[in-house]
Length: 239
Image (cartoon, rainbow, N blue to C red; front, side, top):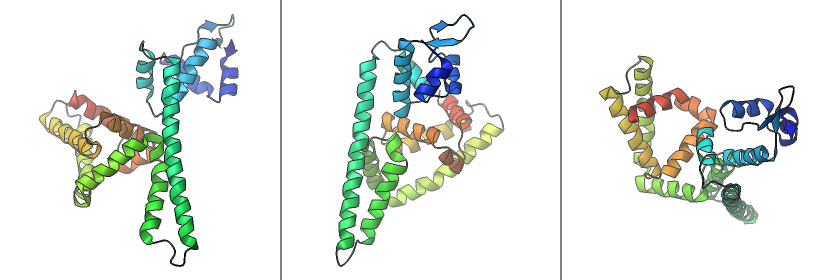
């Protein structure tokens, strides 16, 4: 059995995080010392490992709690999911490495790399290394790339201009305390989902990855004027 401080020190998970997991019922220590200290045993450590694996895959705590509560969720299955995710990331990194090697060889050629080759490489770096590789599988990224081609640049620009207006209208209704059942909000929520469906192709897994991206990258929330309460407001309207 380990006390919370020792568990935090040896695993790198902060005491504050362990307290939070206990408070929400995600990881509850099975024993207490005579002085009332939390004591974590082998079963709790197995569960903590599962939580960390699922967190690294981008799942929110609510979904993790639901997943761990299911009878079909076993430690080997979660490990297999994590391994599969890592293998996909390794594949993406290998693809990036291949592109970088090709670019390096172009620098040794007389004509050097073209502008398109430089842009494509930078796009790959940004996509896989800085952000998107953390939230999307390579297959999802390929699906999104195909969606961009299908929709076309002109339509994508229209959508990019529409999103800020839509978000602003939702924020205005929310600030006024408008009931989510209000027809105006119902119409905005419907359009919200239509835009998401356009971007994701109606794939719920990609939609969840997008949500994880916004939750995990505060700069995107700030840039778009989004926050958790706004998402909750839209969700209420949809329900």
